[in-house]
Length: 233
Picture: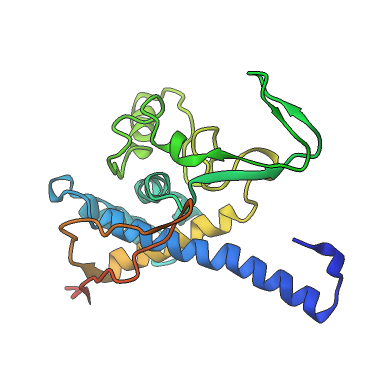
């Protein structure tokens, strides 16, 4: 972002458009990917039913109000979204940076000053060293260890949607990780919880394929879904 533009109309507009592109577009893609991944899960896994039960239970416990505390209880939905962000990440590379000086890597390779570098998100997200069956969408990959640890009262590594790590990079990592990820995570969970409680979507026989442009993946433009409002007793 070019802050040298100052407080001129163009400068302010430039920043707003840039922030909107970074926030609104990525949130929309994240929600769409989560819908496609969740409703493409094998029927035998009952993913939608499990997520719907959680959303309805938490909503009832909090007397029909989505508070911050209520959203935090959507542990399984959180996991389903995090897993979708892993397997259907928007970019192939993450943590793009420009070197401010010559950098010598541990293997002796020298990256000259003023070069752009990044990390292969796909390489990490599909590495079997970090994820069992990495090419399979496992909605409860991250909530399962968390729930098992709670039952056994054993410590566990927190892996919720806003937690970054060296092998999960949709929000970046380290000092300059996305500062808006907390708002984005709550927004995505609210939208999907509302969808689960109030609507039914016909499951996909096959998950629509995301088209790729360079190292970017976007949601399919021509995917169709059948959706209807739920009839409540």
